[in-house]
Amino acid sequence: MMINLLTIDVEDWFHTTALDKYLAPSRWESLESRVVDNMRRLLEILEKYHTRATFFVLGWVAERYPELVRQIDAQGHEVASHGYRHRLIYDLSPGQFRDYLLRSKAILEDIIDKPVAGYRAASFSIVKKTLWALDLIREAGFVYDSSIFPIGHHDLYGIAGFPRYPYALANGLVEIPPTTLNILGKNIPCGGGGYFRLYPYWLTKLGIARMNREGYPAVVYLHPWELDPDSPRVPQADGRTRFRQYVNLRKTEARLVRLLEDFPWGPVQNYLPSAR
View 1 (spheres, rainbow, N blue to C red):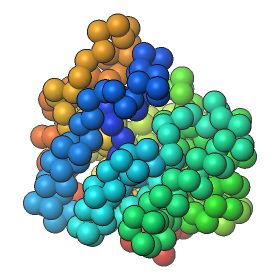
View 2: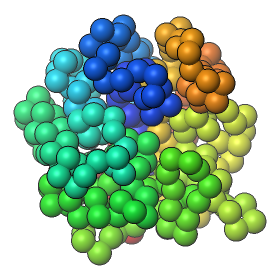
View 3: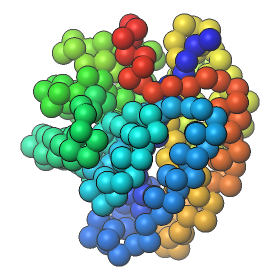
View 4: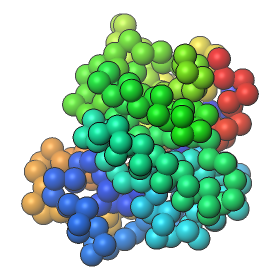
């Protein structure tokens, strides 16, 4: 059977782009951190179902909870980088981006004492105007990137017409895009995150099964805070933000279990030797 790729973006509830305008980074230290407890629950579930995954860890989290990173590694999962702070690439200069990139890689490699091969940008923020970031990612020593969503209708991310499948770039980097379902010539996201919470489970299952029939692994992503129905609320957030952040949090864990029961999963690093 096709081994699909399960990826986890390790960040706390207050790191999300949706809440960025309400919770400035200067406040992060004073907010209730729930990432360790949420991650322990997630790791328990994956252990129960004998599943290994790739964890894109935010450097800010790794600095504060190095034992969590060691636990991820000790349980046989792949540790990858989610940058240092949860900042959109198009809000950074190339110099700032390079600094965050190298800083996060060094932190993670120092903790687990092994090379970190993969990178994923905050909110998939490699778009047409930030394609320059791909060369910096390669120059930093990463083997693959998973930051390009091959869609063209989102306010934060997407490159219309980009390949839907793992793809070797000209600079040698392998791009691992999250899964989309092509319907009538349009790519519909069905690779996890908010889509996993919003869509009925059968649609996610359909997208994964179709990707497998096309000869490729599905790439699904989740966040630890999405398994936390008691995640702190931000009263001042507008309706759109509240919807993005909190919709169907109570359904995520059960849906994840169904996902693990219905399909086999593994980390990105196990797929790379056969990436096309």
